[in-house]
Image (cartoon, rainbow, N blue to C red; front, side):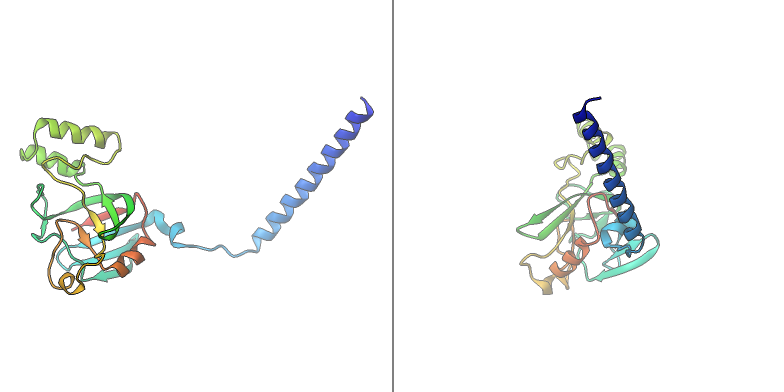
Length: 203
């Protein structure tokens, strides 16, 4: 072994020794540091319960109520299990949030996966959608993608705020086209708890 190779081996051993000491020190220190739990850490079992009768939205963690938002608004024609495009009803069912984006009109928009498989199957049996619409919906849903929003069942539904809308109107009547509306302040607080994939149960 040459002098240079021997020197390189000694340097490598020294570096490994320093690295091992550093890792050991980090492990010891981390054992004494407090673990910080945030809303993001808890999001795996966070879900949303929407009560269309009491007009409330509840942030749930398992079976525990964490936060209740009262005076929400739903579709102007109330809830429905058989929603159609343009009927201004809020669909009942078990959904998930598919994306969250800023909205110029509504402050923030949390889209849900309506029409989901349950609504699609029921609509096909009830002949509210034709064969081509059914196939298009099933194709997307079977691939785990957001469903088409332009079928006879409608779409573009989710949870949103008021934007610059009238708070007094919001507190007086159900005014949406089928979405679930909160005040801007409520929505911003809700946004801290949910993410894409959060379950939303509407009853």
